[in-house]
Image 1 (cartoon, helix red, strand yellow):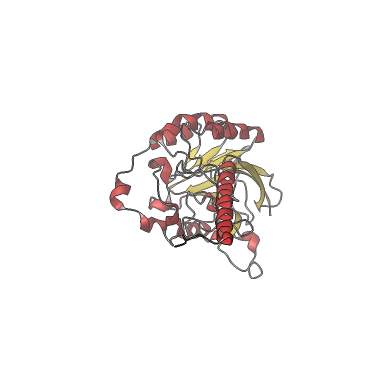
Image 2 (cartoon, helix red, strand yellow; image 1 turned 90 degrees about the vertical axis):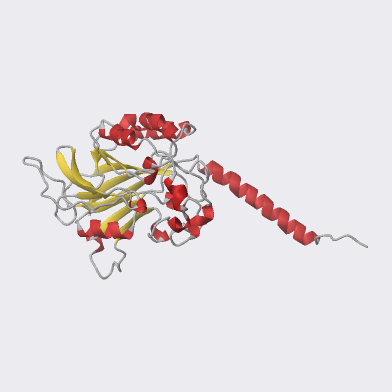
Amino acid sequence: MSGFSFPRAALSTLGGAVVLGAGTLAYSLLEARRPVVRRIEVPVLAPGEEPITLLHLSDLHLTDRTEWLVEWVRGLADLRPDVVINTGDNLSLASGLEPLRRALEPFLELPGAFVMGDHDYRSTVFKLPVRYLRRDPRSADDPQREAAIQALPWEEVRDLQASGGWADLTNARGGLLVRGRRIELVGVDDPHVHRDRFPAAVETGAIGLPAVLDHAGRALRLGLLHAPYQRVLTMMANDGVALALAGHTHGGQLCLPGYGALVTNCDLDTSRASGLSHWPDVDPTAVDSDRLMRLHVSAGLGTSPYTPVRLACPPQAALLTLVPA
């Protein structure tokens, strides 16, 4: 009786798939350690206003094994930004706190502002990557396991940034001065874990301190949030925010070349997984799109230590230049 054997063509196809998979994995591990700087002009200022450079950091996910990223972030000080914005998820494990101190040290004397992400509060744990293909990945979470996740030293993360005078926008409003002119700020805690409470409007401005003006002739207002959920973006747009800044999506992290992100891990559409767009999404021929809120979503700099891969989505920091519309 003859033994069973695979057809030669099937073996060749299987071997090719294995080689392709191994090559893709190797490349994605390499790409995750090749960060880039995205330089983007954002036309949100009034005519005659001087340009403002803004360094947007997000999703560092530091541990005691990410020294390469600490050194790269420190090198961003050479860009000499006017303002630094950090939209959270600084840590993956508690061992990332000391590396975070060194990563942010060159920037703490600059004007800045921050909000927190879930991974500033709770350690990263392994989760099956296929959960992110669900409409709402949180529906795959086990409540008992979630409740047992180790807390991170979030107070130290907060105090580290506040020690440099950065505005803590945890469900709060604030402002910062850039070359003697005021920029208004509003922010929320992480919407992904329902910590957001949009702050009530208050009288803003300070006597003797002129405001930077936005494209609509109002005081320029920036909005900060970690996860760009639609409900918060709409509230920010209605609040007069000219530019909202977020992270959380990792740009999709594993993208298809030529297509883009498959997931965002929130209710934002995949076409906005990273980069600059308008909010809300409307027909630009039907409205004056230059007066809509702009949204910048950072693809972030780190990954979970359990899935240290990126594909067609390199880690990034963004240098945004705010210019007249």
